[in-house]
Length: 328
Image (spheres, rainbow, N blue to C red):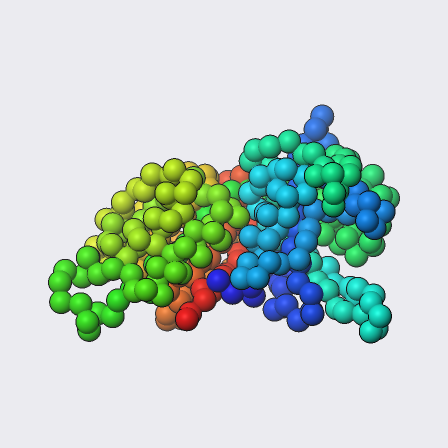
């Protein structure tokens, strides 16, 4: 998968990364005694207070990096939520410094307990937003913190991800003589499916709705097998059924959105206009809705759209992210 996402909320749109050093992290949050709290870490190497974050590993995407760094530094398994502003600054070195940017997300813990790893991190604290503003050593970190607070104040912080996935690259139609529903993934598609499985772990969808056609099932199989989630075959999401009864495909998408549970929906290029149109109807803020693909092919094979639904605003979509696949 590419490390260059397209992320948009009502307040900000992220430009592609341009810095020499790319990193990712998360603002882990919780509500305690009716107050919003955020988790800060102390790093003995720098003697500073910051958020869990770190540089990308080779071949890693930004969302994967954010989740991994939280797990490694403080032992929490998190699900990413709404994207937060990117911080940019210069890291000093003997040659005048290198530009660095850190991509942040809001995040809630799925499992684990926040504890320092004893090397990179020697202390963790849950603090209020006001306390965090005073404690943060890097003043650029205040911007994502303030956005987290604004999201909470507007009831847009507590979210659930709804992910639209186009199946990975399949064998060409011209070289396939058997039933169209049985056309499998190509070799590149199988590699894309593994990459998709790793990327989806950043949002940990619990429901996996998919067209029962083979290329869709093979695309979500790596993720579902790793996490033990059962596939739900939805005939209304096949090319044939959606062409005959597009309202059924729209209805299926709407029902998936109405569950307000972490969900991935895997389908075909010809079905994407129906699915994305329904998703757009749940996205009232025009600045967010503009991130939806609007022209054919909408998404390349193996690409995803990640929508965050605000649980305290009846499922309103408050952010969108698009991730394109690698293509070898």
